[in-house]
Length: 426
Ligand code: GDP
Ligand code: IMO
Ligand code: MG
Image (tube, rainbow, N blue to C red; front, side, top):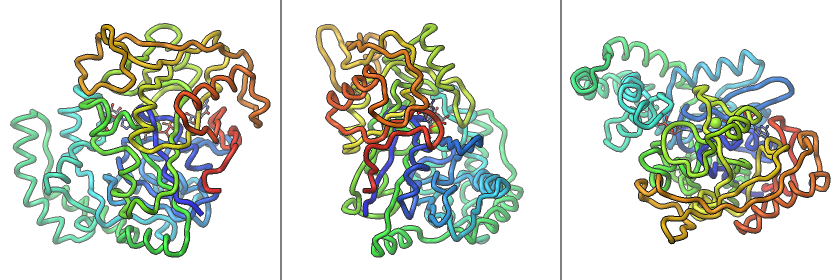
């Protein structure tokens, strides 16, 4: 029995969805604990590709309970569309296998308008209203799922906030506005449809732990997008580190047994902000083409670069990561040499940790190690021993330099394209 947190170690899109889907076989509850539909988690089952934004990536397995925890911000319209979409594809989604926290905050139409008018250009956000929704949560003017499903409460909350939002959107942002009555009517209907799913999920999780069930926590985004520890202000508006799993699901840290970090064999980033190992030539384009590096949520091309051990060291330290799942190693096949950044250099100072001061970034030099690449296509390799020697050396280098295990090696998007040396639940 084990309770495992799965989180991204870079700037998101490391392959969390694939790994969570795979590990779900051994888990009982799969729990999202932060973020919202800014996430795009891709699962490839046979020839079918499914992208999940809000529903945990365990939903395709029968007999598992998926939970959207209190730390998530929920766009009710998107969630209902996702539920319907899965049902149309033949997957069961009902209150029997999906429950939503009554304390999770709701993304309202004004949040999306504000995100578009204010943050898309500045930060390169996904435009899904995530930041403005978390802003209202901390400001104590947010609407929670429990408020959404009670007509009177929703009305009261909208009466409290809509005039101010209207003034901000029109006078300060020069953006379009919303009609309070239309929002009330639409969101009352959405609330009614979601009501059967809404419950106190912390109690559900607590009861599961009492019955020795295995919990799998599914992080969204990645360590460098963490609001406190990432490349602020070019981050998302939630904490993405492992500690957030407890806060955003509603249980204490003594229940956590293992933290598995998902690490792409190179680095990508979507949106604005520093990216020290970014490759701005044909090589970067090659990684994008071979790795299919286009956003699963917005379709934006992802910026691509070499693996960055400064980033990984930071994520490992902040989240107590002991095990890594290395993904997309197949994308590196055919490169003569592979570079890995081991530190940054500012003048004569070597920096092994990410500086808080973003002003330093344009002037940083990179310290690289170079490793020999491999020619072979590894996407059909299923045993560690059959990997090319230089590929094994690359994996060994990462493990040793960072002092972690690498029990899962992914060589393609499909479930079966995975080498599992040790299952974290065993
Ligand atoms: P997530 O947000 O961390 O779940 O990752 P995304 O789904 O946004 O992006 C990862 C992309 O890489 C998806 O298209 C996956 O299907 C794909 N993928 C995952 N693992 C592998 C792998 O080992 N090799 C290749 N080539 N693709 C992978
Ligand atoms: P998954 O879970 C990659 C990025 C956005 C932007 C910044 C802030 O699929 O790994 P936001 O809309 O959250 O306010 O945008 O964060 N971002 C992601 N990048 N993967 C994600 O999720 C992301 N979610 C947000 O591109 O730079
Ligand atoms: Mg993604």
